[in-house]
Length: 186
Image 1 (cartoon, rainbow, N blue to C red):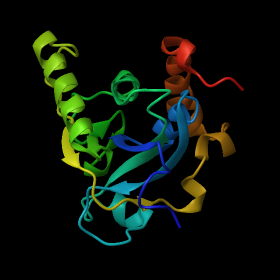
Image 2: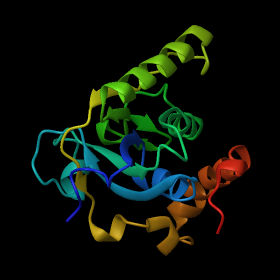
Image 3: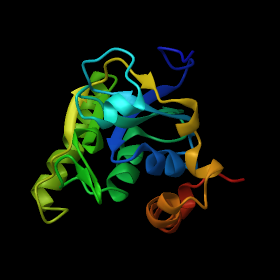
């Protein structure tokens, strides 16, 4: 059973940017992030499972819920990594993954997180940073449902699986190149 609140001195961040396997693999390596759990958020069905979420009928997005230490990494830095690794201009789609469960979303946990996300989204709009309007949803974090056990640490457990090789590995390589100084020391 996952806690509903982060440990003392830490915060949650809940993000949706396509398949949760990609985001989990990246954020597992980000300095200051102490835990990453793949799951579902933003829907209207209690205790959804993967099959239900994939149907698009529950309203949930595939998300990762990060636990992070704000003394080691700021929320804005987490969002900058998030936006560097997915396309926030495609509605309900990331690459070949299509459906509302693959939407770009920030589920904020506090007024400060909401304000930080709004500030960053406004800066992107003012700079036309992505060459198209950003369609990332900004919504309060509601109930988080962890995904099934086989989804947790998926890339680490299945690095040679074809989807991991074609989709996850390139995003992880991009992260390692762009954010080398922010990677955890192993």
